[in-house]
Amino acid sequence: MDLKPSGQTALVTGGAGGIGGAIVEALAEEGCNVAFCSRSEESVARRRESLLKYPVTVIGRALNVLDGNAIDNWLAELGSVDIFIPTVSAISADIEETLSTDIETTILWTEKIIPYLRQSSHGAITYIGSLGTQFAMPTNKAYGLAKAGMVHYMKSLSRELASQGTRVNLVSPGYIEIEGGTWSNWRKSHSEIYQAAVKNNPFGRLGTGEEIGKVVAFISSPVASFVSGADWFVDGATSLNCLA
Image (cartoon, rainbow, N blue to C red; front, side, top):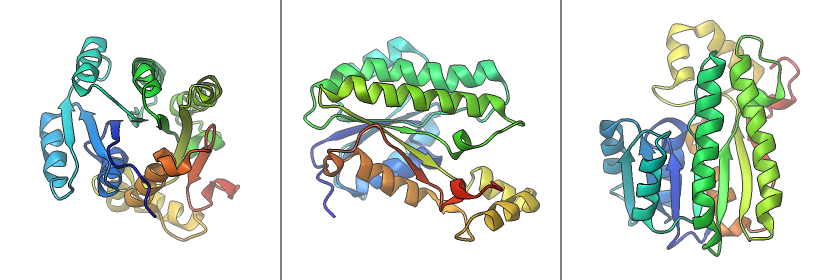
């Protein structure tokens, strides 16, 4: 399917690795220009190198995602943004750190980017949520709290921006295994936790970054022009399993 992203620019926070990196890859593969940021210049350089095979414009930037001036300067340099995909998240039990990273950062970026999206004929925000909003998480209440709060924020924003032609959706991954990521590491160091997650999934496996990236690329594209206010679970039906 031609997702018709040619000429559009997507901005992905946390796009140098993990799920964010897989999203950047999927967008570039579809022909979308991509801008992404990370804390590490080295990580940004590696991601840029991996995208040279695609005939698109790639702009990577190392910056502090909570630095409002740095955000303003970068957006001014870009000039236009059609798609915004915030992926930055703190996997932390510390409530203050998690609320700052997951909520404060995302809202800061979103409010600065909305004026740019209003200028686009296909403006879209796709927030990366979590399967964790569906279950009690007594060992990580901070993460569940932040993600659940952002579901409400994004759904409310979808109503606010609909009349302006900007769509807002969420894509919520389940257990996703990416080399160097949490589940990849647990497969080696905490095999009992890893195997329990595999057993708990009706497909009998964990998801991949590529599978998340492709769903995000579709939801963010002009092809999904009448989709807004939705939370897409990409979890192999784990959210329907009462033992998750």
